[in-house]
Image (cartoon, one colour):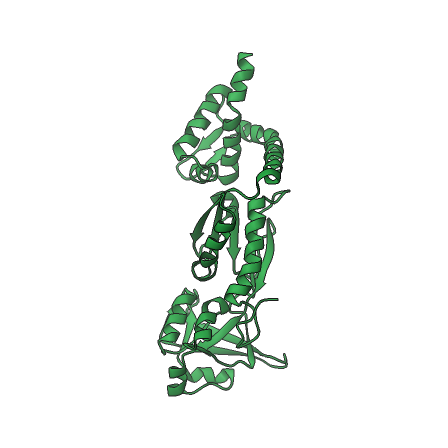
Length: 321
Protein backbone atom coordinates (compact mmCIF):
# COMPACT_ATOMS: atom_id res chain seq x y z
CA UNK A 1 0.00 0.00 0.00
CA UNK A 2 2.86 2.36 0.85
CA UNK A 3 4.49 1.68 -2.53
CA UNK A 4 1.23 2.41 -4.35
CA UNK A 5 0.67 5.62 -2.46
CA UNK A 6 4.25 6.67 -3.14
CA UNK A 7 3.77 6.07 -6.84
CA UNK A 8 0.58 8.12 -6.82
CA UNK A 9 2.52 10.93 -5.20
CA UNK A 10 4.88 10.93 -8.18
CA UNK A 11 2.38 11.29 -11.04
CA UNK A 12 3.01 15.04 -11.31
CA UNK A 13 6.75 14.39 -11.18
CA UNK A 14 6.59 11.94 -14.09
CA UNK A 15 4.50 14.41 -16.05
CA UNK A 16 7.10 17.08 -15.27
CA UNK A 17 9.81 14.81 -16.69
CA UNK A 18 7.80 14.43 -19.89
CA UNK A 19 7.41 18.19 -20.26
CA UNK A 20 11.14 18.64 -19.63
CA UNK A 21 11.87 16.11 -22.38
CA UNK A 22 9.54 17.95 -24.75
CA UNK A 23 10.81 21.46 -24.07
CA UNK A 24 14.52 20.72 -23.55
CA UNK A 25 15.06 23.20 -20.73
CA UNK A 26 14.02 23.77 -17.13
CA UNK A 27 12.98 27.34 -17.94
CA UNK A 28 10.64 26.31 -20.77
CA UNK A 29 9.24 23.43 -18.74
CA UNK A 30 8.51 25.77 -15.82
CA UNK A 31 6.77 28.17 -18.16
CA UNK A 32 4.54 25.50 -19.64
CA UNK A 33 3.68 24.03 -16.23
CA UNK A 34 3.27 27.51 -14.72
CA UNK A 35 5.51 26.72 -11.78
CA UNK A 36 8.96 27.98 -10.83
CA UNK A 37 12.17 26.65 -12.36
CA UNK A 38 13.22 25.58 -8.86
CA UNK A 39 10.02 23.53 -8.52
CA UNK A 40 10.76 21.72 -11.76
CA UNK A 41 14.28 20.93 -10.60
CA UNK A 42 13.02 19.72 -7.21
CA UNK A 43 10.45 17.39 -8.77
CA UNK A 44 13.09 15.84 -11.03
CA UNK A 45 15.44 15.29 -8.08
CA UNK A 46 12.67 13.65 -6.04
CA UNK A 47 11.71 11.44 -8.99
CA UNK A 48 15.32 10.31 -9.46
CA UNK A 49 15.61 9.55 -5.75
CA UNK A 50 12.45 7.44 -5.88
CA UNK A 51 13.55 5.65 -9.05
CA UNK A 52 17.08 5.07 -7.77
CA UNK A 53 18.67 5.93 -11.13
CA UNK A 54 19.59 9.16 -12.97
CA UNK A 55 16.81 10.25 -15.33
CA UNK A 56 18.22 13.56 -16.60
CA UNK A 57 21.62 14.23 -18.11
CA UNK A 58 22.67 17.77 -17.23
CA UNK A 59 25.45 19.77 -18.89
CA UNK A 60 26.31 23.46 -18.78
CA UNK A 61 24.70 23.97 -22.20
CA UNK A 62 21.79 21.58 -22.44
CA UNK A 63 19.44 19.22 -20.67
CA UNK A 64 18.72 15.75 -21.98
CA UNK A 65 17.28 12.53 -20.66
CA UNK A 66 19.23 9.41 -19.86
CA UNK A 67 18.22 6.21 -21.62
CA UNK A 68 16.20 5.19 -18.56
CA UNK A 69 14.57 8.62 -18.31
CA UNK A 70 13.57 8.58 -21.98
CA UNK A 71 12.17 5.07 -21.59
CA UNK A 72 9.99 6.25 -18.70
CA UNK A 73 8.71 9.20 -20.76
CA UNK A 74 8.00 7.00 -23.79
CA UNK A 75 6.01 4.52 -21.72
CA UNK A 76 3.88 7.13 -19.94
CA UNK A 77 3.41 9.85 -22.58
CA UNK A 78 0.37 8.27 -24.23
CA UNK A 79 -1.38 7.84 -20.88
CA UNK A 80 -0.83 11.47 -19.89
CA UNK A 81 -2.06 12.61 -23.32
CA UNK A 82 -5.27 10.61 -22.92
CA UNK A 83 -5.79 12.06 -19.44
CA UNK A 84 -5.28 15.59 -20.75
CA UNK A 85 -7.63 15.09 -23.69
CA UNK A 86 -10.31 13.43 -21.58
CA UNK A 87 -10.25 16.14 -18.94
CA UNK A 88 -10.22 18.94 -21.53
CA UNK A 89 -13.23 17.43 -23.29
CA UNK A 90 -15.21 17.23 -20.07
CA UNK A 91 -14.23 20.73 -19.00
CA UNK A 92 -15.07 22.21 -22.41
CA UNK A 93 -18.55 20.69 -22.27
CA UNK A 94 -19.26 22.15 -18.87
CA UNK A 95 -17.43 25.46 -18.81
CA UNK A 96 -16.36 26.79 -22.18
CA UNK A 97 -12.98 28.48 -22.85
CA UNK A 98 -10.90 29.09 -19.74
CA UNK A 99 -7.33 29.07 -18.47
CA UNK A 100 -4.11 30.64 -19.71
CA UNK A 101 -3.50 31.09 -23.44
CA UNK A 102 0.13 31.80 -24.32
CA UNK A 103 0.49 33.55 -27.69
CA UNK A 104 3.46 34.86 -29.67
CA UNK A 105 3.27 37.33 -32.56
CA UNK A 106 5.59 39.64 -34.54
CA UNK A 107 6.10 43.08 -33.02
CA UNK A 108 4.48 45.29 -35.68
CA UNK A 109 1.58 42.91 -36.32
CA UNK A 110 1.02 42.33 -32.62
CA UNK A 111 0.97 46.02 -31.73
CA UNK A 112 -1.22 47.16 -34.61
CA UNK A 113 -3.59 44.24 -35.17
CA UNK A 114 -3.60 41.65 -32.37
CA UNK A 115 -3.36 43.80 -29.24
CA UNK A 116 -6.35 46.06 -30.06
CA UNK A 117 -8.57 42.97 -30.43
CA UNK A 118 -7.64 41.28 -27.16
CA UNK A 119 -9.96 43.34 -24.89
CA UNK A 120 -12.97 42.26 -26.95
CA UNK A 121 -12.02 38.59 -26.68
CA UNK A 122 -11.39 38.74 -22.94
CA UNK A 123 -14.71 40.49 -22.35
CA UNK A 124 -16.44 37.65 -24.21
CA UNK A 125 -14.49 34.99 -22.30
CA UNK A 126 -13.72 36.32 -18.80
CA UNK A 127 -12.32 32.96 -17.63
CA UNK A 128 -9.43 33.17 -20.11
CA UNK A 129 -6.10 34.86 -19.40
CA UNK A 130 -3.83 35.75 -22.33
CA UNK A 131 -0.05 35.98 -22.21
CA UNK A 132 1.10 37.78 -25.39
CA UNK A 133 4.79 37.90 -26.27
CA UNK A 134 5.76 40.19 -29.15
CA UNK A 135 8.95 39.18 -30.92
CA UNK A 136 10.17 38.98 -34.50
CA UNK A 137 12.07 35.85 -33.48
CA UNK A 138 10.19 32.79 -34.81
CA UNK A 139 9.80 30.99 -31.52
CA UNK A 140 9.63 27.23 -31.26
CA UNK A 141 6.17 26.59 -29.86
CA UNK A 142 7.12 23.21 -28.40
CA UNK A 143 10.31 24.27 -26.63
CA UNK A 144 9.19 27.73 -25.51
CA UNK A 145 5.77 26.72 -24.25
CA UNK A 146 3.47 28.73 -26.53
CA UNK A 147 -0.03 27.49 -27.28
CA UNK A 148 -0.35 29.56 -30.44
CA UNK A 149 1.70 31.70 -32.81
CA UNK A 150 0.34 34.35 -35.16
CA UNK A 151 2.73 34.48 -38.08
CA UNK A 152 3.01 36.58 -41.23
CA UNK A 153 5.10 34.10 -43.23
CA UNK A 154 5.17 32.41 -46.61
CA UNK A 155 4.96 28.91 -45.11
CA UNK A 156 4.95 27.03 -41.83
CA UNK A 157 6.75 23.86 -40.63
CA UNK A 158 5.11 20.52 -41.39
CA UNK A 159 5.41 19.67 -37.69
CA UNK A 160 2.78 22.27 -36.81
CA UNK A 161 -0.86 22.83 -37.67
CA UNK A 162 -1.56 26.10 -39.47
CA UNK A 163 -4.80 27.77 -40.45
CA UNK A 164 -5.15 30.90 -42.56
CA UNK A 165 -6.61 33.86 -40.69
CA UNK A 166 -6.78 36.15 -43.71
CA UNK A 167 -5.00 37.26 -46.86
CA UNK A 168 -2.62 40.22 -46.76
CA UNK A 169 -0.80 42.26 -49.38
CA UNK A 170 2.15 44.61 -49.70
CA UNK A 171 1.55 48.28 -50.51
CA UNK A 172 3.76 51.06 -51.78
CA UNK A 173 2.97 54.29 -49.96
CA UNK A 174 4.09 57.89 -49.70
CA UNK A 175 2.92 61.14 -48.12
CA UNK A 176 1.08 63.55 -50.44
CA UNK A 177 3.65 66.23 -49.56
CA UNK A 178 6.51 64.00 -50.74
CA UNK A 179 4.80 63.25 -54.04
CA UNK A 180 3.94 66.93 -54.58
CA UNK A 181 7.62 67.80 -54.22
CA UNK A 182 9.25 64.88 -56.01
CA UNK A 183 6.57 63.68 -58.41
CA UNK A 184 4.50 60.51 -58.54
CA UNK A 185 6.12 57.44 -60.17
CA UNK A 186 4.16 56.09 -63.13
CA UNK A 187 6.08 52.83 -63.58
CA UNK A 188 8.18 50.69 -61.23
CA UNK A 189 11.40 51.84 -62.93
CA UNK A 190 10.60 55.43 -61.93
CA UNK A 191 11.39 54.37 -58.36
CA UNK A 192 15.12 54.54 -59.16
CA UNK A 193 14.78 58.34 -59.00
CA UNK A 194 13.09 58.30 -55.58
CA UNK A 195 14.14 57.91 -51.96
CA UNK A 196 12.89 54.40 -51.22
CA UNK A 197 12.40 53.38 -47.59
CA UNK A 198 12.89 49.64 -47.44
CA UNK A 199 12.91 46.81 -44.94
CA UNK A 200 16.36 46.07 -43.58
CA UNK A 201 17.61 42.74 -44.92
CA UNK A 202 20.86 40.96 -44.17
CA UNK A 203 22.10 41.50 -47.72
CA UNK A 204 21.96 45.27 -47.20
CA UNK A 205 20.68 45.87 -50.75
CA UNK A 206 17.03 45.91 -51.80
CA UNK A 207 15.15 44.92 -54.92
CA UNK A 208 11.41 45.43 -55.22
CA UNK A 209 9.55 43.15 -57.62
CA UNK A 210 6.27 44.03 -59.32
CA UNK A 211 3.70 42.32 -61.48
CA UNK A 212 1.14 44.18 -63.56
CA UNK A 213 -2.45 43.69 -62.47
CA UNK A 214 -3.24 41.85 -65.71
CA UNK A 215 -0.26 39.55 -65.10
CA UNK A 216 1.38 40.35 -68.44
CA UNK A 217 4.46 42.13 -67.10
CA UNK A 218 6.91 41.54 -64.29
CA UNK A 219 9.80 43.78 -63.34
CA UNK A 220 12.44 43.91 -60.59
CA UNK A 221 13.76 47.29 -59.51
CA UNK A 222 16.90 47.85 -57.40
CA UNK A 223 16.09 50.64 -54.96
CA UNK A 224 18.05 52.92 -52.71
CA UNK A 225 17.14 55.28 -49.91
CA UNK A 226 18.39 57.22 -46.94
CA UNK A 227 16.57 55.06 -44.38
CA UNK A 228 16.03 51.36 -43.68
CA UNK A 229 14.46 49.61 -40.68
CA UNK A 230 13.50 46.11 -39.64
CA UNK A 231 10.02 47.20 -38.53
CA UNK A 232 7.15 48.15 -40.83
CA UNK A 233 5.62 50.55 -38.28
CA UNK A 234 8.82 52.58 -38.33
CA UNK A 235 8.93 52.62 -42.13
CA UNK A 236 5.36 53.86 -42.20
CA UNK A 237 6.04 56.66 -39.73
CA UNK A 238 9.06 57.84 -41.71
CA UNK A 239 6.95 57.80 -44.88
CA UNK A 240 4.29 59.87 -43.08
CA UNK A 241 7.11 62.33 -42.38
CA UNK A 242 7.46 62.88 -46.16
CA UNK A 243 10.95 61.38 -46.41
CA UNK A 244 10.26 58.94 -49.25
CA UNK A 245 8.28 56.01 -50.64
CA UNK A 246 7.91 52.98 -48.35
CA UNK A 247 6.98 49.38 -49.03
CA UNK A 248 5.04 47.94 -46.10
CA UNK A 249 2.39 45.28 -45.37
CA UNK A 250 -1.21 46.46 -45.56
CA UNK A 251 -1.76 46.12 -41.81
CA UNK A 252 0.90 48.79 -41.25
CA UNK A 253 -0.45 51.16 -43.91
CA UNK A 254 -4.25 50.95 -43.88
CA UNK A 255 -4.98 53.39 -41.07
CA UNK A 256 -2.68 56.04 -42.56
CA UNK A 257 -4.23 55.43 -45.99
CA UNK A 258 -7.72 55.92 -44.60
CA UNK A 259 -6.72 59.13 -42.83
CA UNK A 260 -5.01 60.54 -45.92
CA UNK A 261 -1.59 60.77 -44.28
CA UNK A 262 -0.37 58.36 -46.96
CA UNK A 263 -1.51 57.52 -50.47
CA UNK A 264 -0.88 54.33 -52.41
CA UNK A 265 1.63 54.52 -55.25
CA UNK A 266 1.71 52.39 -58.44
CA UNK A 267 -1.75 50.97 -57.86
CA UNK A 268 -1.66 49.36 -61.30
CA UNK A 269 1.11 47.03 -60.14
CA UNK A 270 1.14 44.26 -57.55
CA UNK A 271 4.15 43.92 -55.25
CA UNK A 272 5.46 40.35 -55.17
CA UNK A 273 7.90 38.58 -52.90
CA UNK A 274 8.60 41.31 -50.34
CA UNK A 275 6.21 40.30 -47.55
CA UNK A 276 4.10 37.20 -47.02
CA UNK A 277 0.58 37.18 -48.45
CA UNK A 278 -1.16 35.31 -45.63
CA UNK A 279 -1.59 35.61 -41.91
CA UNK A 280 -1.49 32.23 -40.14
CA UNK A 281 -2.48 30.88 -36.76
CA UNK A 282 0.03 28.16 -35.93
CA UNK A 283 -0.19 25.62 -33.10
CA UNK A 284 1.65 22.45 -32.11
CA UNK A 285 0.02 19.26 -33.34
CA UNK A 286 -2.41 17.66 -30.91
CA UNK A 287 -5.16 15.16 -31.76
CA UNK A 288 -7.70 17.51 -30.18
CA UNK A 289 -7.65 21.31 -30.41
CA UNK A 290 -8.07 23.01 -27.01
CA UNK A 291 -11.29 25.01 -26.94
CA UNK A 292 -9.50 28.16 -25.80
CA UNK A 293 -7.17 27.98 -28.80
CA UNK A 294 -9.92 27.31 -31.34
CA UNK A 295 -12.08 30.08 -29.86
CA UNK A 296 -9.27 32.64 -30.09
CA UNK A 297 -8.37 31.65 -33.66
CA UNK A 298 -12.02 31.84 -34.70
CA UNK A 299 -12.31 35.27 -33.09
CA UNK A 300 -9.22 36.55 -34.91
CA UNK A 301 -10.40 35.13 -38.24
CA UNK A 302 -13.63 37.07 -37.95
CA UNK A 303 -12.31 40.23 -36.31
CA UNK A 304 -9.06 40.97 -38.13
CA UNK A 305 -10.38 41.51 -41.68
CA UNK A 306 -13.24 43.62 -40.31
CA UNK A 307 -11.07 45.79 -38.06
CA UNK A 308 -7.82 46.05 -40.05
CA UNK A 309 -9.17 45.74 -43.60
CA UNK A 310 -6.52 43.27 -44.67
CA UNK A 311 -6.16 41.70 -48.07
CA UNK A 312 -8.53 44.01 -49.92
CA UNK A 313 -8.08 45.38 -53.44
CA UNK A 314 -5.84 48.39 -54.03
CA UNK A 315 -6.94 51.59 -52.39
CA UNK A 316 -9.98 50.15 -50.64
CA UNK A 317 -8.63 48.84 -47.35
CA UNK A 318 -11.39 46.26 -47.84
CA UNK A 319 -11.83 42.94 -46.10
CA UNK A 320 -9.97 39.74 -46.82
CA UNK A 321 -11.39 36.95 -48.83
